[in-house]
Length: 477
Image (tube, one colour):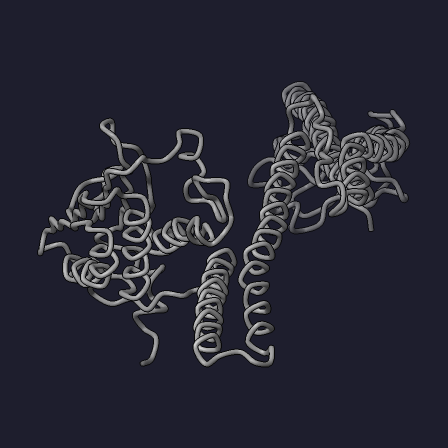
């Protein structure tokens, strides 16, 4: 069942319930009003009968026969009005509705104690009655007056018929109107659905038309366009990753193939073979590192857990990374200076954090001039109101090109345009730094020193979210 039909049916049902309840309330109020008016009329007639009986008591001597036999009739002759005067025992003294008593023994008892309203049937017709005590000829009697409820019944019947005659078409018209309004309201949704069905991976730039209504449908269209923007960005990023990875893999694979083919030629010397094998091993090692970096980035994109968290003294970890880089620094006569706060402790993956520091040091050593100093600082500070541990690496090289800074942590991005191996790595070092920092709940930033050189730092929370690292802390060894 379509949403449009469901909305129409629900609205029709709601209107039917409202009209029914309003009709029932109207009929109840009408009946109550008419009965109240009739009761007031009966009370006035009873007062008149009581007054007449009292006047007869003072103006006429008591009768010992005629009035006791209950055969007085014709005092009240209206066809739709009833009057009876009865003794407390039930003997009819006066009546305009035959010799039969209209009050039962119980009603006579209640009427003798006070006023009583009730409804009875006389010759198949409903009659509203009112009885009260009175005095006639010095004796206590019960005066009962009544009137047919035919007028009330007819009024209620006409009102009920009018409600059905007007209510049923009104419900149908309201339901049809709700169906039309639902169709008009959902028409933009239908257009959006058709538009979305025509969007494929080949025309990812297509977007939905946002209605000018500024309602929920317009908000839905804007949200869908936002989703399409993110999907387009993700697809473009994936395509770029595949293209860049293919480009990066092609160079070492081509070199590896050439070296193996060269080594396979007959008549090669032992030294030539050793050199070919060494070059092939270096290319293989580069391929392995590139594959591992791509796998790590892919797991980070998918939100997969790749941390093995434990308490860490950050200064010790950074010092160990510097010791591993001393050999590369000595080849270019670059000194390394560490200023670390030994009390800085965090919870994180030591291997991944070593990878962060190693990538930052490699990047600094690659661009620092000979004889300069690479400075490394580890300290505790506050970022956005929360305490964080900061790892800073600074060099005195040329720094980042201004146009490159906004893209420094993107994948396969380099400050130079070259892509040969002599120009550096694959352009994944800083991207891995940002991904690992983000997995720890931190972030990475880069800037240029005013006096020259690059300044790159990573902020890591001192108290990471337990939910983020729970899988690692609870994982079995």
